[in-house]
Image (cartoon, rainbow, N blue to C red; front, top):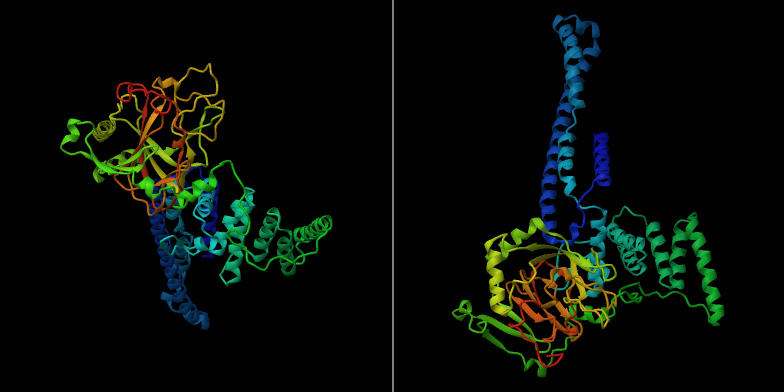
Length: 558
């Protein structure tokens, strides 16, 4: 039995190592839900295997008990036993036929069905990239919403407490993922949490020596030599023969005393305060407005005040007496005064939303951005979602929604992009970006067009949508197709606004002034989804065809 279980574990390990998958499953909650049912089916298959093994073992035990009783009688007086012709016949029969049947029973492998089922499903399984992506998503949520590792490990998220806990080994693997990416800031936080839970008496596979090994070096990389020395000494005390620890300890001590001599300071022992969120400063990255962006995601730093709020109104909007809106005008609410951002209520019905999601799900693919240097579409960590593009030819509901958006905005959809549907995955986000194409700083440049996203203000940004011949993205119409339990706001770091998803509503703003110049205030972001599954759909309008619907103004910033 033990050999058979060992074989199954070995087979599963081989499957995990050899499977080739589509990867990036973690970028879409919708596609991840399919894995829940796959896992349920595999559990059922595993139970069937266990039941088969138990039935087999029960049959073998029955044979053993019967034969044990029989041999006790036969061996007590072999000649007397065989003197009876029936016993002699049955001995011949047992050894010739029945023991062969027992051999066949023992050689049966109930694991074949289970392994076959695994082979069918394994092509849809996540791979190492998905696991790493999901781990980094948790770290992103940790940073954005200022959650310590313990909160995550105990399933305590803002407003939610669940049984989704992280074990010592889970925390260790999180820390190792960060460590392998040279992200020592997060490696420290997760290795410390792993050590804390181990010291608390949790059962674990990983050893304390391994945790201390990773933690001490990560703390050293964060520049905290006294604590690195203290942790390494703990490691050496547990395992005096640990060669790397001994070498690191001598190196750390020499380095610390050298620094103290240069600064003419006395040795100060490591702080006894446990490492937690805020102990070390998070390294800066490529995003200049990182702090402001994340604060808005938490609902902090909002620039809404009484004066601005007094300028916001709600109204019925009939699309300038559009026949389709006269009897049922749209409810319009001001979200921001300048730039003007509005929210429309009851834009999409539940039935329409479900149909759009149904159409999009089979087509969902990792959302891409255009590299500002090369102009090539590529995936990026700052955009974690999957998207699909839907045309009016795909289903009548798309044509109906397109017409409704045109009626509401007064802008033609003839030159607009297809309806883009997006589903955000674990920690799904889209960091600050512009929807419009920013023209290069070249007075001789006469191109027009658009791009999907940007990093910063590069001079050599290519003209991404020139081939469309429809000009720049003049406006954005963003449908919220789900409520989100926590996180997932649309924020504008430049002027401190945050708009929270509400199913069935939509927000609208212009990306360009009437002159055609870009409104740089509209740089916005989709905050990481903390809890929930976020579905949105976008309609991006382009300049061509809007000449009489949105005429030019008298100044550059009208």
